[in-house]
Image (cartoon, rainbow, N blue to C red; front, side, top):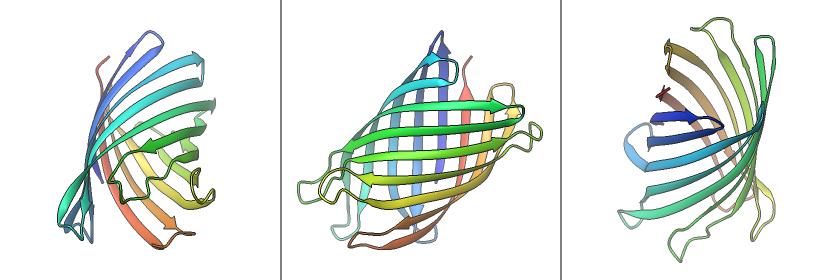
Length: 189
């Protein structure tokens, strides 16, 4: 996964835009390309609520074409700092559109995270996320465990390098995916 994001904070609001490219099959195929726009509102220190919209082109391998999809996320996040350790929990309601032939699951996603700041160059993190499918099955059918490091490149830009192990289960298409990613973010403030 390769991504670029920009954000700007205005009082208690934070607006963001990102572009992402996801490859699969050992980096040999484009799996997904998307643009995402979002806004977060800081309710109190550490607690924020947000909304995002995603426009994506997903690879439809059997048809040798790309499907256009739209996704909306509504979420709430709490972050708590203890010295150089930051703990977080994020809960997100996610729904999307797709082809009428597809099962377009609606998810409740919960993500737990921890990040420790050794220095600006060494800021490792670990996260665990599970996906609860709210329509049809009503089960947890995917988890993601990630580790990585966030490097501060300048006062307003970061580079994140990470690995995700994704486990899909309780579905027809069982999968265990190994995902490598690089993300660059720029804060316009």
